[in-house]
Structures are given as structure tokens and as C-alpha cells.
Length: 360
Image 1: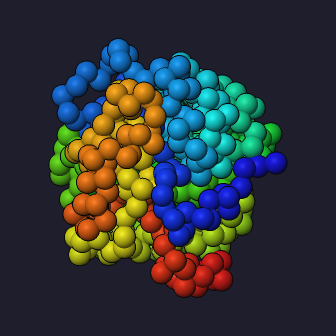
Image 2 (image 1 turned 135 degrees about the vertical axis):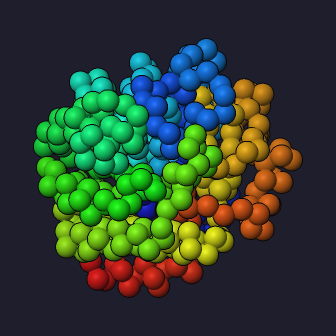
């Protein structure tokens, strides 16, 4: 029986502990995307020294409690040779409803083999894999500064699509980083993704943080809105076929509301709804640092200094002060992953969700 996302409904009211964790498993990456914010702080991008180990995950995971959603990120998460074991450690300790893996798709055989092992060992979780596609053919290679990346990413997607036939807990999709340099050709890319086997769940993410090339973030809100409208139309045409997990129709409605709020945030440059970063959402880096959000410059502390107990870390003054500042509106962003939680656990948005739900 699949782990139900509905187990977490009490967090709608209480919001006392994290139910979503993003784990940056490594800084290592086999691409050199100029819009990457995570590899832009001068640290060694290749070294494995100091990476949070499997044993450290096993010590830390129980202190998190049950999770709704666990996202593996990086760097390229499939470069971790122990990704299957890491996934199983969290699966055993936290029973996540969703395990999410974002990948550039550059290692087709390794990605598919690793994903199949995760699917077999984590049968009660939905395993969602998002392959990155930011353009078609040479444009994707240019945007990611990685020759041959488009061909390999599409190969990875097609190979994963075959797994989908054998593993009902596999959720497969494509994510596109919406950039200044691809915003004018988004229609063609949406058409291409629509033609992939699956059908593909297609999401778009605005470039964020402080990327190597700051111009990547200089996007036209009107073009973002046009792309969002096209994806909304696709969802309304085939929502039941796009998402396969429990609560799929609600997730499709949330996608629509989310992109409208992100457009408003981009246009008005201010927060639209309360943010639960540091309360329902946490980030764990490859070095053990804990942040309320990927965009936050202030660490809440290193879990190694708290005996691998996240609850102790969150009770410390630094974490309490960060949560207070976020609650008071000290920042705003367009981080899609956090918008999901900020929408689904905010009762004031339920009328908007209900309207879109009934239209699907």
C-alpha cells in the first residue's frame, strides 16, 4: 500500500515540524550550466570530501519524523554511488509519500539502473524523476554549456518511460528552467515535450538565486504567463493521465494556482502568500548544514553539531530567529518547491484550489 499524502493533514493547522526536505547530496556535477546557483560560491565542485555519509543519514533521518516529500538534489544526485542506499535509509525511517530526483540526464544507463533499484526498494513511495530540458537540440547544449546533453537527456527520458510500464510508482516528468535566453522559444519546447512518451509532466522553474550569469534571471513576466497558460491548458486536457499518484487531481490544481502566484511575485517583486520555510520545509546540504530555504544565506546550524538531531537544531536560537524573520516577510522568491507547500497547507487558498480542481 502506498504511503498516503493525506497523513499530513494535521500540518495544515499546526505547522510544528518539517514535512518536506530537500537534500543536496553532492556538489559534484557533470554539467556547467551558467544559471546554476548552487555551484557559484567558489567551493570545489568536484571533491567528495565531507559529503554527508550514508551512516550520517541513518543517524539523522529518525529525528525528522514522517515526511510528505523528500527531494534529492545537487549537483547531479545520480553521481552519488550510494543514492539507492540513501533513498532506502530515508524510506525506512521517514516513510515519504514522494521521493523526487532532479537530473540533467547525462548518464542514461546509470540513471535508469539506479532508479529501477529505488523503485524496487521503495515500493510504497511515489518515485518522481524530473529530467531537465531547457531547449531543443543544440540550444539545450548551449544553454547548459555541455555538448551532447540534449541527446542524452532525451535518451534518459525514453528509457525511464519504459520503466514506467513496469513500475506503477514511477512518476516521470520534464523540468525546464525558464531563462532570458529560452523564453522566446518556449512554445516549441512545450510542443516537443508534449510529444514524448508518458505523457510527460512538464514543469517550468524560474532561474533563481545568484547564478554565474545573472542575466539568466532577466525574464519577461508576460512570456512566463504565456508558457504557464499553455501548461495549464495541457493539464486541463489530460490531468488524470499526467499525474498517476494519490491526490493527482489536487496536485494539478495546485500547479495552476502556483504558476499564477509566481507570475504575480515576479511582476510585483513581493511575497504573495505566507511562507513556511523553516517550519514545514528544510534544506540539508552535502556538508550537513541546515537551511530554511535554498535561497537563504543564513545557516540554521550544522546537524553534526547537534548530535544529528534535527529537532535540537530547530529549537536553537538561530533557527527560531530565522523562522520569525521569514514569518514577518523578510524575503520573497519564486521557488516552486516551496510554493507547493505554501499553497497546499494554506486554508485561505482552498477556494482557489477548489475552483481549479472542479475545472479539471
